[in-house]
Length: 172
Image 1 (spheres, rainbow, N blue to C red):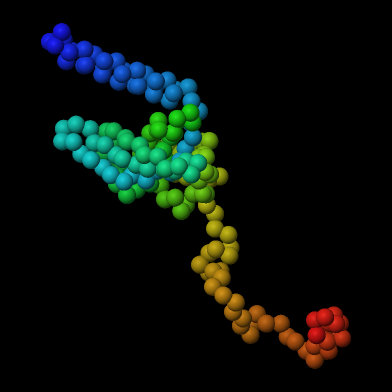
Image 2 (cartoon, rainbow, N blue to C red; image 1 turned 45 degrees about the vertical axis):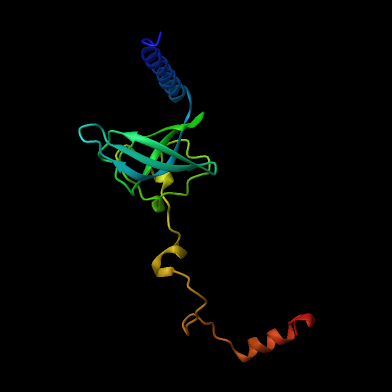
């Protein structure tokens, strides 16, 4: 019996691993997908083996970690779109290998996007682009209340007298 113990342990471990892989594949293929921004925190090269990328992302106020294998395009410190299984956020993957700048996207909803905000070529889809309003551009940045002589309206004695006559009693 002791001779067979290592073989039994290997078989049990293999069956548990196989069940986990089958379950994850089932959830991945039957679950809806959501898309979130992930940050690659660590990249590890394993000699002749595939490299691994550890990344984190937020979904519904919780932080999750994922591990991607094999991609040499994904770089540490960059942001990518992570595809997440709706039924189980621990099942996820970086499928589009182009880095993104989160500042150029509209803010990520807490529960993620229902479609990828970027195209397969890495460009941002128009409806997910963050558009600057006129007040947000550098030329029109509001840094305080400043008036110049050009911006001021001409105030005449007549307009001052008019305001004095028509001011409510509790404002005097």
